[in-house]
Image (cartoon, rainbow, N blue to C red; front, top):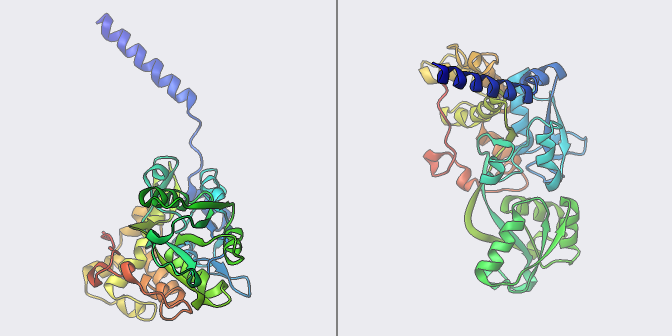
Length: 342
């Protein structure tokens, strides 16, 4: 009896010390966002097709529309969002300190990032890391890059990739480090480095929009590995993680169901139980997330599905003409696989 009392007393003391060391629960991200009236989204420092302001200052791109989808889910308004351009070094601290609410597809999902203060939601783009080099150098594969200099943005996984490639292939690659995207790209095009490294699709965007003559440059894989580029939120707020995850999932699920911006109103009359649940005709999904029941319907109504977003920003309807490749739906041979809305 006495032993049990002592044990109970120790447990109470431990619980008290934990409570004393734990600050009061902060306001949830969803509550803070609603009180503010808009979402704050991290953004790239200008990559056409993924995230950049147009001539009128309106942000466009696949990453941008990912954030807009969350704004639609929360507010019913794709423009209830503010974009904050961030460098590779700034983006994770900005998320962890609450300066932004979402960090979109500028991050590769890695173990150490996942374990150190951020939660990844659901991939929005699958891509390999690539090198871009002038064709005049006559190099079209990583194995032939011995001694080459490479422009690298600090704070990105490309620093690790360059070192890994150099070590594995015994290339003695020389990294030239810059602290922001603009400086890295400018240095490459001015001839300070032989190669530029980043995601292959971003390289295609840079080549198409910033090179004097895009045909003068070649892009090839740095490694055989595919990366999952994934929007992220802070650790510690499961509701916000769910809201962002399922807002993004709605884009892919809509494409699988054949729901488009044009036919979404007609699809409200579908007899398919999954479609009815998805569009909020049958209640439950919205309530589970703390959102309106028609949040997925409203996302598609304002933005379309993932395929429509891809086509207008990166694909055949855009100046970049990038093939969807691994970003096709799984039924078409890609990696995009929507989860179940029920």
